[in-house]
Each structure stands twice: as C-alpha cells, then as structure tokens.
Amino acid sequence: MTISAAQIIPVVLSGGSGTRLWPLSTPQKPKQFHRLIDDNTMFQQTCLRVSPSVDPRFGSPMVICNTRHEDYVIAQLEEASITTGTVIAEPTGRNSAPAIAIASLHAHAKDPDALLLILPSDHAIPDVERFRDSIFHGIAAAQRDFIVTLGIRPTGPETGYGYINAGEKFDDHAAKVKRFVEKPDRETAEGYLAAGDYLWNAGMFLFKASAMLAALRQHAPDLLAQAQVAYASAKPGGRHIRLPLDQFSKCRSISIDYAVMEKADNVAVVPVDFAWSDLGSWASIWEQSSRDGENNSLHGAAVASDSRNNLIFAEGISVGVIGVEGLVVVATPNGVLVVPRDRTEEVRKIVDALMPNS
Image 1 (cartoon, rainbow, N blue to C red):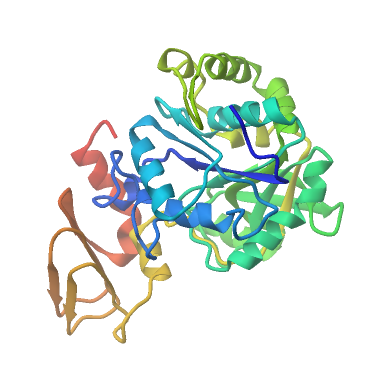
Image 2: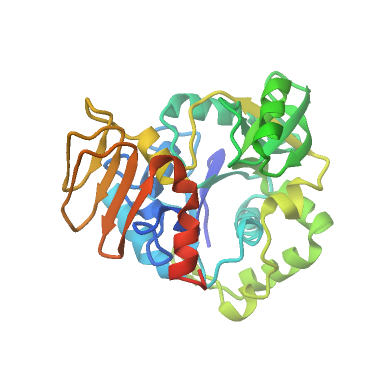
C-alpha cells in the first residue's frame, strides 16, 4: 500500500447515492458519475481540480468509493487521464466518518504528518484557481494540528445547507469554529446571513493524518478501533484496496461532523468566497448550466418551442416541450420526472414512493 509523498493528498469521497437527482441519478449510478453541467462527470471534475499535473503541490488523489461503483471510478479516471494514488472500495456505505478514518490510517502508514484534503466528489466549483488558493490558505493551521474546514460565505438565506459559526481569526486566514449548526429554517437562515459570521458547511476538510486519528481516538474510539480492524483485514491489489464486508460493516454509520467536528476543540475554518454548489437538486443544475436565449437549459436530445426558464434533460430518449415555463423535465430509461423548477427539493417524495427502501 503506497501513497504519494506530495504536500497535500486529495481524498475524493464518491460513495453517495444522489437520489435527489432521480431519475438520472440512482444508487446503481449516482450523480457524481454523470455529465451534468460539463463534458466531464462531477467525479472527474473533482479529481482534475486537484491533479498534480495542474499543481505539483497536490499528490495523486486517493478515491474512496462503493464496491459497486469501482468500475465507474476506474473507467472515468482513465478516460480523463487522471493518475490516482489509491482506490479504496467500501463494500457498504457507512457515511463519511469511517471513510475518513480509513483514509487517515492509509496515509498515516506512510507519513503521520501527511496533509489530507477531503473532497466530496459531486460539487460544482467554477473558479478553480480561487478554490486552490483557499486550500493553501488553510495549510498553516493544518500544520499546527487544527482540523480545517472551508466555509463558504453565504450568498443568500439557504435552508438546504448546514452552517459554521466562525469565531476570531488566529492567523491571516483561519478562525476558530464556535459551533456547527444544522440546516436552518428560512427565518433562522436570514438571521445567520445578517450576523455575518456564519458560513455554509461544504464538507471539505484539510488536516494532518495524525491530527484526525487523534481526534477520532478521543471522540469516536469505537469507530477508529473497528476501522483499524477493517483496514488491517483489507485485501490490497496494487493500488486498489477492498475493505472486507464482515469487518467494515461493523463500523458505526456516522458523519464526520457528528463524530468529530462538532466535538473537537481544534477545529478551524477558512472563510472562502468562490462560487460553489453541491448540485443537490434539479433547480441547482439549471442554475449552474448554460442556457439559451429563452433561459432554457437543454441537455441531450431535448427541444423546446415557445418555452422559457426550463431544464430539459434527456438521456437515451428524445424530449420535446411546447408552451411551458419554469419546469424541470427529466427523461431517462429509469423513469420520467416532470416538476415545477421551484419544487425540485420534493423529488425525494417520488423516490420514497417508488423505492421505499432507498
């Protein structure tokens, strides 16, 4: 098991199911492996942002994925000419904390002071240069054993994101975190926006492997102990590591926010201003996509006549609309979705009805 000795090792978490973008995104092929707003998939875009060929301060990315998505990961890395350090395959999803524990153990085996950059695989970040600058702004704090998170300055009272309450800065870029807060209602979000010291929690972290393992040892010792067993029992195959189901499934399913970030006192935030979206709804796809003169975003074999402000997404089927406004129409071999653009957050209701065990 080897990893790059470069300054920052990106760790791309690509195990999510992305069912909010049904019917295109499914547990079998979630949104990160689709081309949503670019010629590259979201997974490819994420890896390319931190490729050592673009900036030598990054090492080859470590990828953590579900076993059933391993073929997508390998094929899409090859397609985009991305050299990966290690692909770690989870036999079942256990949320972000076990995945980050495994990544930290893997890096620590080579270099306890290795800096890991945790990145979700399905985010849209148009300004790549500003994104990279923000990462490097967090290095000094991370090297002082802080667990650093990037906090997005909010552009509106968003209720779909968690927030970070930032305290006083202790260096040119980083501030101590006062607290993490759950997704707020509209009134609370407006209060956060007015206060000026609340940031969106984007789920991106920078830390030394040793610092994260120490935090897990203090705040989630059971999880770390089981992750150690699973990692020690893994089957290495070159740059591919497959975690055993019998051991990894015993890891507690919990996010890193709940397991560590909300409990540790060495958590810092770097406030950042780059445009960002987690592409968590079809409305956000429309917002991030190029549009025609009538404000329609058309993907695939899609045609719109006398229509405006629509997202029409066709995969494997032709779709035409006439005289409609403000709709999302998605047609794939998996199903068809028609919903007002301002109600796409309700897609989960359809998924729950069609796939009760999702």
